[in-house]
Image (cartoon, rainbow over all chains, first blue to last red; front, top):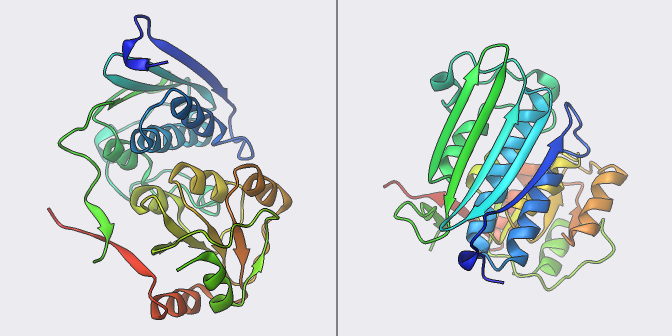
Length: 159
Length: 118
């Protein structure tokens, strides 16, 4: 099946539970396997998986759980993570590397160091965040299926 | 270098049953911060870490890490090893510290990943 030839968007969604660190990351694994099975190139699967994982961790840690969805349509993959958590007080601050509101218990797991949203931005071609204090946050990240000018090629093994 | 060589150099023990000792490894990345691994690790990069929770395997899986080394002799809990086996990610454990493990592998020719300024 060639996803690019689909007329209807392909959509799957998963619920993520608050503070469930055993299950956190399952959605990212699921989405990656799904994209692989649809014949999406490995580097695109990898980017979508990283974006999903960070968005999922945000919903698990900060959002009181939520819903994470994968939509495959036309030339793009869209990851949507929606929660009904406390919202983000200052989005531009949250986008800065190193800014965090996560407790120490989260840092002991290797997260919560203020890299989540910057990582999502790094691996996305488009990113929108809608947030309202006391109501929740919806993040929408787009990864284009074709090669982009901003391919993540800024890192490579030293020659 | 292959995983079998890495095990000899680090005097490491296997953690997962299905261990492909011929996995080819050219680069490595050492971190206890999984967000840094997600930000920087490239596909094919050996992950060296002192953390042992299940999220280590989730992270290894999403970044396409071919193998994981647990340092400081910290044995991961069952759920981490179970997930390593499910995801077919070879995992080994060494009593060496992260610094020593990195130094030995660097000396043996494993390369770092390095940011190229644009």
